Length: 173
Image 1 (spheres, rainbow, N blue to C red):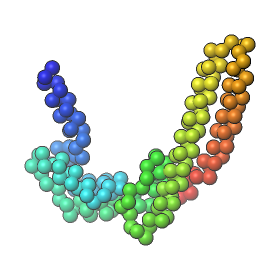
Image 2: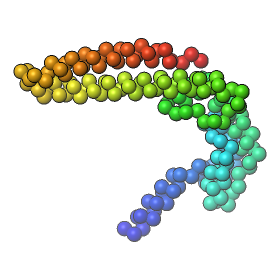
Image 3: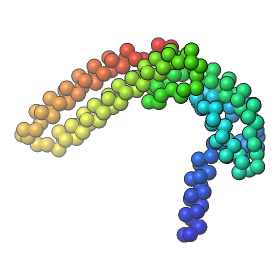
Image 4: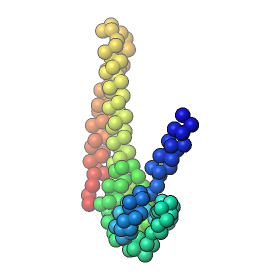
């Protein structure tokens, strides 16, 4: 039992490492930087790799990582990607060029709004499921039935309106 707790803690800590031992040893730093840039990682993220690889006595090739990251940022810093990032409910990382910031923030905001409306639709659908469950439990003579049926109708109309709104925020890129 005493051995289980430290092993579990070690497993959790290992899961937090930015790179595995084999990735550190392989040393494909440009490719690692490319992937990090494409995910919008800041330049300080290289420190996570230093920490992970230091365990194995390996130091990242910082210049190669930065070259790769810059290439990856070209993928990340596009309007289409900014929108996509927003559709996941995530704000765009502040790693793009200042002159592109307004267009990218606009695209990201459209994606965030699309995401938020989707969450509202999901909540309304869940409420309809809850109402249906409650209706199935009630007797036919229950006075609560009419208000639940009315609320369900209202929610269906709300979903239709939200879906119409959401179309406005779909991807234009």
